[in-house]
Amino acid sequence: MTLQDDEKAKIEAEEIFRSEIRKDLDAKKPPKSRRERLWALLNSTFILWFFSSVVLAGLTGVLSMRQSHRNDALKNAEIEKRITTEITYRIKQALSGVKRDQINIKKGRAYAPDAYYANVVRYLDNSFLIDKSDPQDFSFYPEYRDLKFEPLVANLMVYETSTRQTLLKQAVKAYKGLVTGSEMGEEGWLTTGTPPNEIPTTAAVQQSKDALAEASKTLESNLLPIFLQWSGFIEE
Image (cartoon, rainbow, N blue to C red):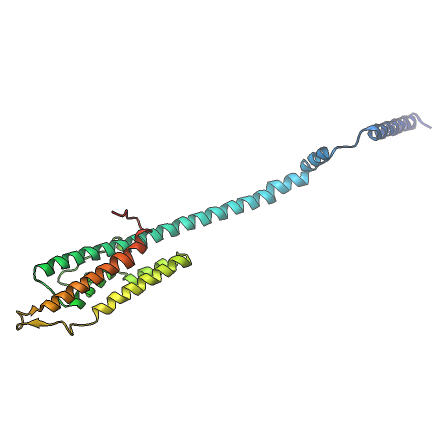
């Protein structure tokens, strides 16, 4: 056996000895606790990769989705508020028109009941715009100026709960009652004298007053409370 072979054998013997010592020491060590085993697992390469990529990516996706939903909810709430503010403003303008008509009746200027219902509908539909001689705009937001009452409510329906949708349907029904009044014509509304100096009879004037009172009640009791609570207006 050469000197080199002797050295190799010596090194191998030392390595075997060290290995036996390590095994003996490991055998004498107390078993690792559950916390130590868990900590060792958490510090393993796979777990670190899993948390840094898969879990983190999942959390980022969830947070992004929540933020998107929150942004959509805020956007929808703003649209809802703008539409209800638009409708509320038109109702208030219609009520102001009714008060002016009531003053005019007291001054002796009375018209057939259907004319008063028609005026209220024009305010709600913002259809005074089509009057070429004196176009007037009673919209609050420019983007809604060409929308009538029913399309505005239909747009609002998209953002409402079933309970609110029921209220909106009641509002549409009240509006249609006003439309029906505007279409009844002058039959039964009596005047005396000859055109253009016709004078409504006392009974006819009372019919006009009743029509205005009914229109005012519809606006104040059936329409305004529904939209005012959701609008940007502060109730006076």
